Length: 489
Image (cartoon, rainbow, N blue to C red; front, top):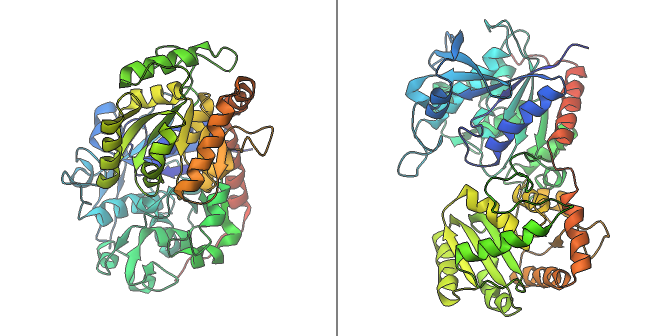
C-alpha cells in the first residue's frame, strides 16, 4: 500500500520554537507517524531559530499568488535530526522576528498576525492544490489551532482538485479573531463572509473557518472532544461543534519518552526507574536542599509546575495552603502568570520559609527536578484540553492530584476507586474539593506498600506517541476513504 502523504502545518515546533503543547506535538508526532510509514512533511514559518538551525536549507518552491493580496514567499527544505522533512515558509518581513512567534516585545499580539498566519494557511492550501509546483503533493493537510485554521477555507474556495483537511484543536480558547477588513487583505472572496463561511459574530475567525471547512476535526483528548460540544466549555463554538459532531474525535497526546525518562534524565542528580526507586528519595532530598526546604524525608512534598492562572486552578491553592501545611506538608512551586496569584504564592513563601518554596518564571531543568523530587503533583485545572505535566508525573512516579476535566480525566485513574489507580481525581473546581483530594493522596503516601503500587501503575503505563500516532494514521486512511467534497463556487 502506498504511504499516505500528509502535510503537517503548524506555527511552532519543538525544540526550536515552542510556547506550549502545540510545539511539543509538532516536534514529536510527525516522527512517530513516519515510524508507521506515513509520508509526512512539516510546514512551519522560517523563524530566526529555524534559520539559524538550518542555514543550508534549499529552496524547493516559490509560492505565487496571482489575484491575492498576500505576498509571494519561498519554501525551503531541511531535515530534523530524526530525518523528518521540514518545509520552512520563508518571508522575512513576517517571520524574521526574535522571541515569541505571536507577541511583540511589549507582550501584545503583532498587529499583522492575520497576514502572517494567513500566509501560512495559504501556503498549506497551495501545496495541497492543483496550483502547487512541488513534486511531492499532500493528500491530507493536517492543520493545528487557529494559526493554520484558514487553510481548509482556502482549500474549500479553490477550484479543481485539492487535498483533504483535518484540523486539531489544541485549545479552543484561542480563536484567531480579526476585523472584517481582513477578509480582503487575505484574498478571500466576499462570498466567504457568512455564517457558513469564515464570519463569526462580526469577526473573521481563523479557528471557526477551520472547524467549518475541514473534512475532520480532532482535539487532544476524548473527554475534551465531548466537553467542547457543551455550552459550558464550547467557548461560543459549541453549536458548530455539535453540528459537526459526526466528524469530531479526540486523540490523547503522548509525551517524548526519551526527554521525560527518570532513568536517563540529565537534569536529575539521581536516576531511577519503576524497578529501582532508590533514586527518587535522593532527588527529593536534593530538591529540598536546592529550594531551601526543610530536609525532612517524612514530610510529603507537593509539586506544582504550571502557569499560575485561574484556568490552571492555581487560585484554589492559597486559600487552603495553611491547612495543607498543617498536615504537615511542603510545597515546591515553579511558574508564572496572573500577578495576583504570583503575589499570593510569594507571600506564602515569605511566611513559611523551609516549608513553601516558589520560583517565579520558567526553568526547564528545575521542572524536571520537581517532577522527580516531589511526592505528589498538583494539577487542579478548570479546563485542560490534554495536559502534559500529569503524564510527566506518572512517568516519574509522582502521583498527580487532578480535576476530572479533558485529558486529565483520560489519563489519571483515581486510586481510591480502582486498583489500577495512578493518582487522585476530584470533580468540583473548589478549594474544598482540592483539599479533600490532596488529603486522600497524603493518606495513601503514608502507606508505603499502597503508595508503591500507585506509583508503579503510573510508571509502567505507555505514555509515548506510539498509540496516538496509530490513531492518527487510521484517521488519515478513514478521511481519504470518504468521498471528495465538491468545491464551493
